[in-house]
Length: 279
Image (cartoon, rainbow, N blue to C red; front, side):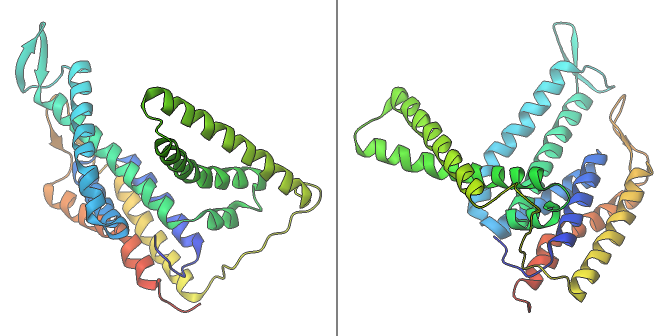
């Protein structure tokens, strides 16, 4: 995980712009650029070995999306064959593959967001605006990895006692649920003992905005809004049916996708670049 000294606000703004821009368009160049950039960021954070273990699953997701779209849509001018009088077209396979890469890019970017923006930073950003919702979301973010670790410990203990098989897994899940419920009750009692919800809430945070945070936020917003304007204006539109073609020239698509690719690498260029900066 990145250990940087950048203020959480420009980081959050960056991810909002990136995700909205990625969801807005179905352009081939931008989808592929976003996916490659997210893979580079994930390899930088988690190591290339973990990505290589995940790569077969990514290929499977793209293949499944292509097959699902192939079954549901039969439009397109390049007909490969017929199955039960239904046309199997190259355009349908192409659109499904795009859908798979689009989905993977979004998932990777969300995982990067989770690695970079911690629960404390999320609580700092929204604690005063929506305290109940922010603390609930932060607890969910923390609970999921805790449940994974607890389940591993319970499974290892059960296997050490010689308990294997489907029945053992059911008992492990039951033990995990009981443990999590007990911990949630204890956590609620601790919050009540500390006076949560009884009066005006105060909070402590160690985040201070500095000049570089302002500069970073300005760059992120300026570049992101410019790219989003180009994408939202319809200039990057592509057509899959009846044939696969671009509205703009390949040069324009390539130039915009290069800028988007660099923008999608900001978690490395900006955040890692200040990880050892001054307080």
